[in-house]
Image (cartoon, rainbow, N blue to C red; front, side, top):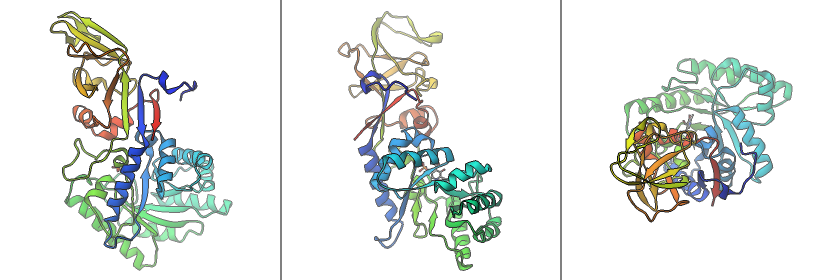
Length: 390
Ligand SMILES: Cc1ncc(COP(=O)(O)O)c(C=O)c1O
């Protein structure tokens, strides 16, 4: 991504990633997921979700850090990501960690060979590709570990009921496949005590119990994403798959009342590059969408939609300077936004501008863009330098 390896101080616009906040969130989630079980000592495994470049935070450093904190699994949705972190951690981490890809298996033998040779655990979403995986594994004398993806109501990928019954039986008869787990995914886990989520859990529990009575063993049964961890605790599950909460957010446009504080891990910030006093009735930026009311002190900040600062925030958000909010004025450009400094002449060129972060969580932008923190985080582009602090 960055061919020149400049010192961090060369970059005006950065995503500062705080690994101590990540650790705090990880430990909080671990404690919360222990509440799944009646017995306090029962181990609930953690599969930390690092897909989509660790929700924009940088998959390598985040995977390494989470491995150090003791995550049992790292989960991606893409096999290239799984293979890349495997290679990276082989060279950069002392501790070993299981890697699972929750996406669909490729039908390409060469690709499957890589997956099996690197011991990536896979998600079974249909019989045909698992049979192909079995054939590839037999030529390599390997037995890849498979987690069956049971689609209980998301209607995205996975095997649905009643086909699941036959499918699991067939997979269990494949000589070069080891069934390690079975899992599902919620459609509405962010809503507490919701009928559809409870129906999904009921279907999953009934089917898994039936299969276990038929003699099929699942070492791991997992269902809960962030919403599920906080809203749907069940003794039946022995692994959780947190994503957004690791990065400091709940799957909503606000922090839900009554739930613990998480710490936003990313500070997306820039620096003031120019300050001008602009006379009244003067337009700012493309399309003349903002006119000054009187003399106004305007700061130009080198961050724009090319970095992940949405154009839709034109005249429609604030940024934080010295812990105070200042409005963005005029159209957001690819590389710039302009900020009204409200006649504060103390603010100087080079001062920090926080777009979102620990002291100004991304919920405010999510609300304005009618989206969730997930999209805001994933949208930070590759040209933004990620800086890791502890
Ligand atoms: C299969 C699966 N498990 C877990 C997660 C993590 O979800 P969240 O980020 O809401 O915790 C995701 C993310 O969408 C997912 O697709």
